[in-house]
Length: 475
Image (cartoon, one colour):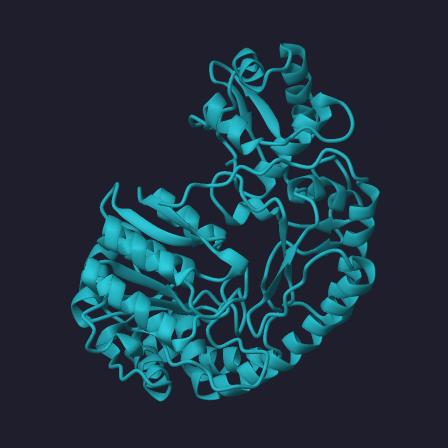
């Protein structure tokens, strides 16, 4: 098994803040490391600190750490590698961190099921495949037909766009990675609201960005702080989700958007705007135009990322980047170092589907509205002391817990068959132990039933050993 250096003992200790739960210290330590591994805060293949070093950092006996590592080995989460120490590993099948059976309800992913009419568009695209089989070159920008359709969609929404401003990607996450690969230099500063989309944070770290986290009071962007930080630090980049933010569900109003654009223009900051959830409105109302529509004439540099993963189906790996032609050309030129283009059949499927995207969005709104209502009702009955804001759109509810015990809830939920992701996965350096993202992308009945099991797990935890949060600094 190939291994790589993992966190230092001080770094791991910070991630383990408040790890002491109910039961023995060794079991509590093993469960918390398992949670960190399962939700991505620790990566498989990374080495853990030596037992003696970690014990000294945590202020426990070496015997405790040795026993915890032993429990992790029994559960398939730690392997001994000759000459390399102990490395983290993910078992072949997902299991709860306490060794429980695989989860019967998954609340870890905020993704909806495939749009029911999708197979018809797949069949239509497959019938057209012979038209493109004779392509004589690799295409780094995407099929012209699809780029024209995406450009027309932007134009219809209030942002005049031509196909030369579109680059097709293999999903939004891929698009974020391409933008960072082409434009960001290692150690460039990047401002981001926290909490935020975990995989976007991962991509920023992997690209070598120096992340500047901005807290979100009341789960909304602090635009005053955005203006202060951009003016003071003049960061090279910023990442934001202005519509139905993941995970909080918040949306910027028009004046807030204009203020961020003015501040970014003055600071010379490139805004990477993630609009993957922008059209997932649940409540009726006039939608905002694309964020970049307000940038015209401001001098702000906006690069927009979108996809069909949250609207049509997560298995249809088609996304896009919308930017000025020069930036699109630069990203396309840098792309071959990472990949050689987007699957053509998937592009044909989305090109066929775009004329009917309003049907997709209308169907999604009906489903999300029903699941949101079912989840909120269940939370009100079973967990009345949890704070449950009502999102106007998006795919999740950012619930507030009465005690900072989100990470401790993960193994407790796994024991009753529910898979969740702890709140700190959406932040930086351990914050958000008082929060939990509850997805609403699934069917109402099963999702509400999963919340009922979650309530059972919460009540079964008792009222001991709350986690002490470690809050990230705001620069």
